[in-house]
Length: 339
Image (cartoon, rainbow, N blue to C red; front, side, top):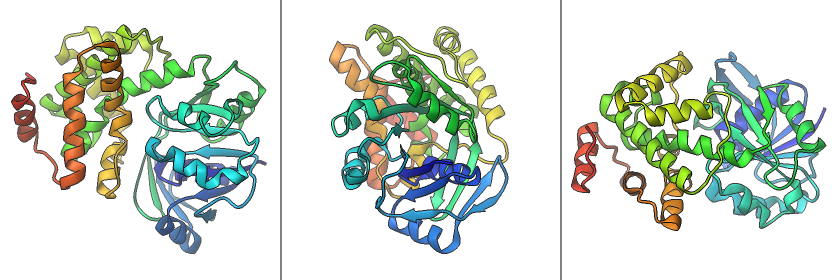
């Protein structure tokens, strides 16, 4: 049994905490006041593809002990503040980062020694809209690895713990795995703009077209930047390259079939949409915004991703979603035409 602290009890952190708790580990969730208070009073309610259960689990707003292992599950924009708030109890503690995008490990390494860091690519889908309640819509898996240094016994031990509750494998190219997840995750913005699930995105021909074009712009950027991708449990590098090469309509159909197989009774909601529904900032600057940043660095045009970032920030401010027709019209005004 391990004493595990999860800093960031959102959708992913809460699910992993509940599953590890159910497997017999001593788990403490660190989260926001409303979520923490509800869990302490009523337990953490989990439903979804692994059934329904209530985890009686410790929950606090800050760490007050030194765990054997810490999972950092906050959004990338909250990484620095979350670490600083709990830093006194993280000395020499292995820290597993669970953020989307590619900047998290660098931010963490500016605060704690690089040898403590293990990086994870998260392929599960969970939704957290109400304090104390989380739905696991798709289990997926985790890919973990050492962002600084070689594969070692510590990463193997963490993989063994996690594999008890979710399929987990170790990558020798975790940065490349993060990049492939980023490219696939560029569609995260479309539900945030339209209040749709991922399945609804790919059943709408215009949104599906946009999703593929966002990914292709990202793939082109990664290629020109010299990024070496690594495969994920749900998406291999060859599949991503085929999606990049096929006619757009065929690529959309492939993604639609794949998404429909993943989405069963419970909708697959993007993390950006969940943030907007909870009136929280999205991590769009670390998703589509990352493609724009790398594009600017290497002189690669990324007009579609840049416009999408702008529009997601607009939805954050106004709390007004776009209809598909209005979204296409807004893109057209910027000379971005989707057929």
